[in-house]
Image (cartoon, rainbow, N blue to C red):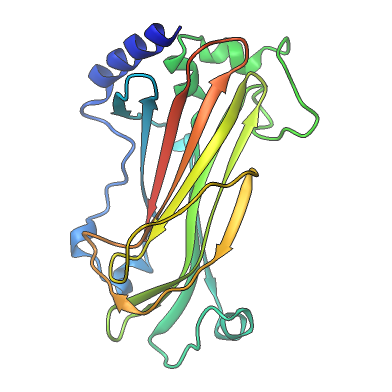
Length: 238
C-alpha cells in the first residue's frame, strides 16, 4: 500500500499544478492595516511520509473555514494580549480550518464518497467531525495577534490549532509550528491532544506581507486496516 500511496500522489501532482490550495491575496502588498480587512491566507500540502514526495492540494470552497474575531480593548487588557496603548492598535484571533477527508481518501486509493458515507466503519465514541460524513479529517492552524497600523508592527500572543478525525481515518501524531519572522526562529511543539492553545512570548516587530507571522499544523494521518501514512500540512498566515 505504501507504493500505492506514492503512485497516487504522483497522479495528484499532475491534477493540481494549476490550481493549488493557496489563498490568492496579494501578500507582498499588505500592511497590518489591509490585513485587518481580508480573510486569512493559507496553503495546504499532502506528503507521502515514505517517499517524502509533497504536492499541493485542490480544495472546494466548502472545505475551507476561515475564522477572524477582533478582540476589544477591554478584552485585550483583561486577557493580557496587549496594552492597547493607542487607537491604531487592534487584536485579532484568526484561524483557518481545512477539511481534507477527500484528499486522504485519494492518497490511499479509496472512493471518498463510499468511505465518507459508509456506516460499516470503525468508530469511537469520542470522535467528532462533519455531521454529514462518517469518515473525515479536519486540520486547523491559527494565531491571536495584535497589530498596530500606525507603525506597521505586529505581535503574537497565542498560537493554536486542532485536528479532528472520524471513522476510518485517524491522526497518529501532530507537529505544530509558529513564527513571527521579525523576531526569532520557528517555535516547535508536539501536541498529544486534538486541540491546543499556547500562550507565547513575542515582541513587536515590523510586518512584512511577503514574510508574515504564521502557524503550521502538521497532521500525520492513517487509515484503519491499511499501510502507509500521509502528512497533511496546513499553513495559516497573518
